[in-house]
Image 1 (cartoon, helix red, strand yellow):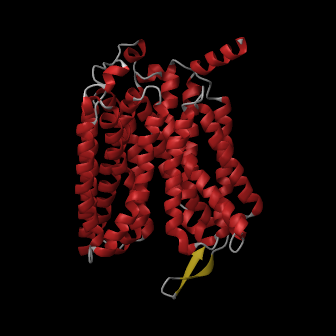
Image 2: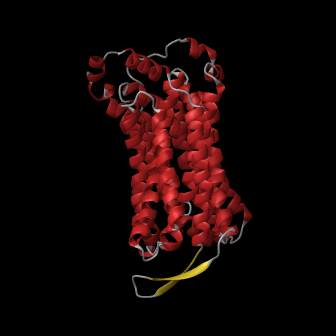
Image 3: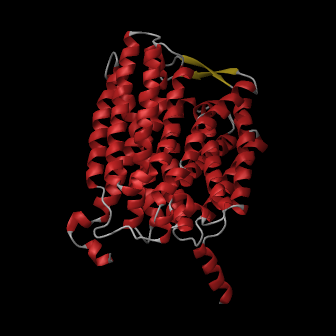
Length: 457
């Protein structure tokens, strides 16, 4: 389809109405899964379980996000309308079901049925909505924005990252103002709001007018055959560096609030959390748009890993987390590490579909992207848990005091050495990821051709 045809016909053939806006409606809804930390303690208190017991709901949500994307990638490939509708129904139903089981747990304190119900609804049902909703607009965006694929996918995935910054204050206000049982009421209300948003996105989402799936050799081969058309080590390398980047990101992000408190900024935790979410979203958009200007998108991953290694090494060498309180330079360096890791974490997500399309073409990109998101599933089960295990088994717990706005003093329990030890694990993993990036992931045909032309000149 020509560019002039795309420009004609009003909103029905407008790439913003048919791709960008619906992608943002879908991703800004499902991205609120990352608001879990806002209400996890309230859920635990309301149903009579420990915070640790309820935390598994979030881990299951991320796991089933990745696994549903892996197993339903072919559905997305064949019919984005069916997959986006599945996403809207499952996400809203899972959220409403979570609200119901929170209500049930409040009436029946300590009920295992309530806890399992939250696992099933927030983890499994919402997880299916997350996986299909995440995948549905990606290929459509790349088709509409052929010349700026990175910018397009970055825009949508940035919506997923920005959802936390947008929704967190709204959720907190709802919890503060809905009175008794506000936690389950919030879920019920948001289930309706997000269903409307996602359903509108589902109705608007459409591939370019007149575009038909080309019957290429790759299309007839199937997903695994396309992956095997290049050395299998190439795909394994992409999967591994994606997995490691998420694992390291989650390891640090899961301890972010406590690290901020350790360096004497307990009163600014909320602000810093919002700023880090902005860096997360900015990394998704910025790194992917930047990659559009490069011959080989893999260069972006090299930059992400080098920056992450450099800032992690600085904090390890200066013992920034342990000695940061009262030291403005170390405090600034620790904040820089948090922001750089958040940006790299987001950038790793937004560049995966375009990197895969550069290597394997567009014919089966939704299915290949879906399989690759299984890395997210396993990282969701290992990143947080790895960091928690290190903090619980290394270092020494100490108490620090923090004055609240009303003048009262709050005693906080922290483990600065433990958080510092988390960085030893992440820097090793980042180094492994950089080696994988350099050795296993080969340049694309486009990059090799550009290199030949440059050498010829």
